[in-house]
Length: 213
Image 1 (cartoon, rainbow, N blue to C red):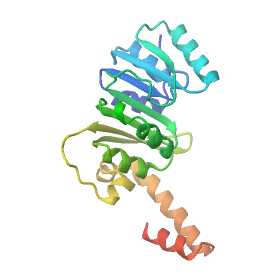
Image 2 (tube, rainbow, N blue to C red):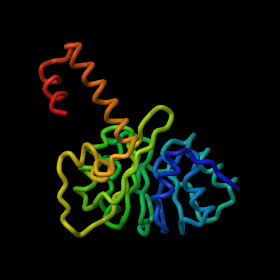
Image 3 (tube, rainbow, N blue to C red):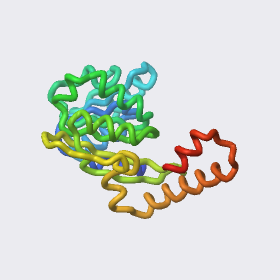
């Protein structure tokens, strides 16, 4: 049974280490089911917090006939098993992702890896998760459906890692690699910001912040 994954989900798939994972906001469960079918994980928990999406998720898992994936009706990671070592949160806003993680500090203590696909506030995500005792192990950028997505893998560390503000904004790995998608994304942002500045319709405060950025 082959499952087609989008570029974004395929990128996340490739970052997942073997172990027990929890996928928050799992949608139809394609990622977890695919990981299970390919024997890339030991066990998977697919999470949704609304009854309609949860029922669709459960049906998808049942129809896939995988025996090491379960659907969980829950908010975030508060109800996951203690031995989950990797958490995936993809396809939602960055501030919501931060709230999910901050609301379950006892679960965070046991987690070794967090893989994030935040659709906004990415710099805040980097800053807040590294404060929780994680380092940024890997980063990839994907262009799909006319949007850029930054996929970030955080790993638990006992070391003190110092990041610059530019690392949070641009990504410590992405800004060193400077691949073509990364350059395209920031060139487009620069172009849009220049256009806004040229129109001279922004407040003085926004002009100052835009010029600084």
